[in-house]
Length: 103
Image 1 (spheres, rainbow, N blue to C red):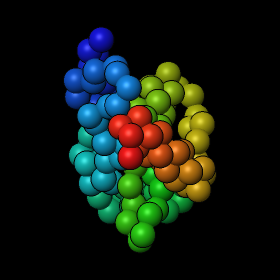
Image 2 (cartoon, one colour; image 1 turned 60 degrees about the vertical axis):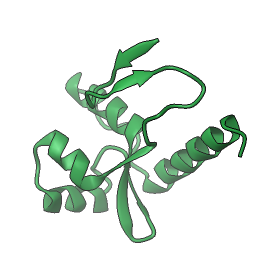
Image 3 (spheres, rainbow, N blue to C red; image 1 turned 135 degrees about the horizontal axis):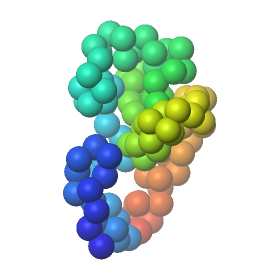
Protein backbone atom coordinates (compact mmCIF):
# COMPACT_ATOMS: atom_id res chain seq x y z
CA UNK A 1 0.00 0.00 0.00
CA UNK A 2 1.43 3.39 -0.98
CA UNK A 3 0.46 6.61 0.80
CA UNK A 4 1.68 10.18 0.85
CA UNK A 5 2.90 11.29 4.28
CA UNK A 6 2.65 14.72 5.84
CA UNK A 7 6.18 15.46 4.65
CA UNK A 8 5.11 14.88 1.03
CA UNK A 9 7.13 11.70 0.61
CA UNK A 10 5.53 8.61 -0.88
CA UNK A 11 5.54 5.90 1.72
CA UNK A 12 5.11 2.19 1.08
CA UNK A 13 3.79 0.17 3.98
CA UNK A 14 5.95 -2.90 4.26
CA UNK A 15 8.24 -4.52 6.76
CA UNK A 16 11.11 -2.06 6.16
CA UNK A 17 10.48 1.56 5.25
CA UNK A 18 12.79 3.28 2.78
CA UNK A 19 12.37 6.58 4.61
CA UNK A 20 14.89 7.47 7.26
CA UNK A 21 13.75 7.41 10.87
CA UNK A 22 14.98 10.96 11.37
CA UNK A 23 15.28 14.21 9.47
CA UNK A 24 17.60 17.09 10.28
CA UNK A 25 16.42 20.18 12.13
CA UNK A 26 17.20 22.32 9.03
CA UNK A 27 14.94 20.04 6.92
CA UNK A 28 12.14 20.24 9.50
CA UNK A 29 12.57 24.01 9.79
CA UNK A 30 12.25 24.32 6.02
CA UNK A 31 9.00 22.36 6.12
CA UNK A 32 7.69 24.60 8.89
CA UNK A 33 8.92 27.80 7.25
CA UNK A 34 10.98 28.91 10.24
CA UNK A 35 14.66 29.73 10.60
CA UNK A 36 17.18 27.11 11.69
CA UNK A 37 18.14 29.35 14.59
CA UNK A 38 14.57 29.41 15.87
CA UNK A 39 14.31 25.66 15.33
CA UNK A 40 17.38 24.97 17.46
CA UNK A 41 16.11 27.38 20.10
CA UNK A 42 12.75 25.58 20.26
CA UNK A 43 14.45 22.18 20.29
CA UNK A 44 16.59 23.25 23.26
CA UNK A 45 13.42 24.21 25.18
CA UNK A 46 11.64 20.97 24.29
CA UNK A 47 9.15 22.79 22.07
CA UNK A 48 10.17 21.46 18.66
CA UNK A 49 8.03 18.47 17.62
CA UNK A 50 10.05 15.25 17.67
CA UNK A 51 13.45 16.87 18.32
CA UNK A 52 16.22 15.12 20.25
CA UNK A 53 19.97 15.53 20.53
CA UNK A 54 22.35 12.76 19.48
CA UNK A 55 26.11 13.25 19.56
CA UNK A 56 25.79 17.02 19.83
CA UNK A 57 23.48 17.24 16.81
CA UNK A 58 19.76 17.95 16.88
CA UNK A 59 17.64 15.48 14.90
CA UNK A 60 13.90 15.12 14.46
CA UNK A 61 12.08 11.78 14.69
CA UNK A 62 10.04 11.72 11.47
CA UNK A 63 6.97 9.83 12.79
CA UNK A 64 6.72 11.92 15.96
CA UNK A 65 7.18 15.12 13.92
CA UNK A 66 4.33 14.18 11.58
CA UNK A 67 2.03 13.09 14.44
CA UNK A 68 2.74 16.22 16.47
CA UNK A 69 2.10 18.52 13.50
CA UNK A 70 -1.24 16.81 12.99
CA UNK A 71 -2.03 17.37 16.69
CA UNK A 72 -1.05 21.04 16.44
CA UNK A 73 -3.21 21.44 13.31
CA UNK A 74 -6.18 20.19 15.36
CA UNK A 75 -5.40 22.80 18.03
CA UNK A 76 -4.03 20.26 20.53
CA UNK A 77 -0.85 20.59 22.59
CA UNK A 78 2.37 18.69 21.92
CA UNK A 79 2.11 15.19 23.35
CA UNK A 80 5.80 14.25 23.39
CA UNK A 81 8.22 16.89 24.64
CA UNK A 82 10.87 14.78 26.38
CA UNK A 83 13.98 14.54 24.13
CA UNK A 84 15.18 11.43 26.00
CA UNK A 85 11.93 9.57 25.28
CA UNK A 86 12.06 10.67 21.65
CA UNK A 87 15.66 9.43 21.36
CA UNK A 88 14.67 6.12 22.96
CA UNK A 89 11.87 5.72 20.42
CA UNK A 90 14.22 6.52 17.52
CA UNK A 91 16.73 3.96 18.77
CA UNK A 92 13.96 1.38 19.19
CA UNK A 93 12.74 2.07 15.65
CA UNK A 94 16.29 1.66 14.33
CA UNK A 95 16.70 -1.65 16.19
CA UNK A 96 13.38 -2.90 14.81
CA UNK A 97 14.36 -1.92 11.28
CA UNK A 98 17.73 -3.67 11.58
CA UNK A 99 16.09 -6.84 12.89
CA UNK A 100 13.60 -6.75 10.00
CA UNK A 101 16.40 -6.77 7.44
CA UNK A 102 18.31 -9.49 9.30
CA UNK A 103 21.30 -7.60 10.66
